[in-house]
Length: 79
Image (cartoon, rainbow, N blue to C red):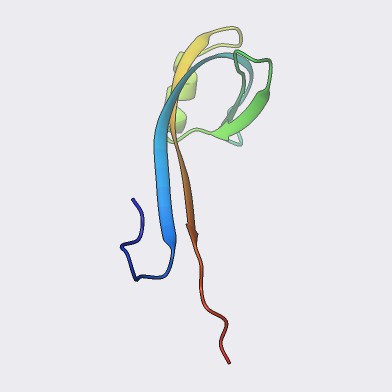
């Protein structure tokens, strides 16, 4: 979406991304799982439902879906 003519310039864009990753570590006390993505990058994420950590093991492949968003607007300086 973007601003209309005569409005202050602004815009936003978003997308949903699905990634297949490998579980490299599970921390049940902290409710986190570390995953390694297809490009080799690792990320530690907090489980939304910690009980689900009981159903996975290190080495399992999981599909993770997340949203990315970017927004920008220009404001006129106050005098």
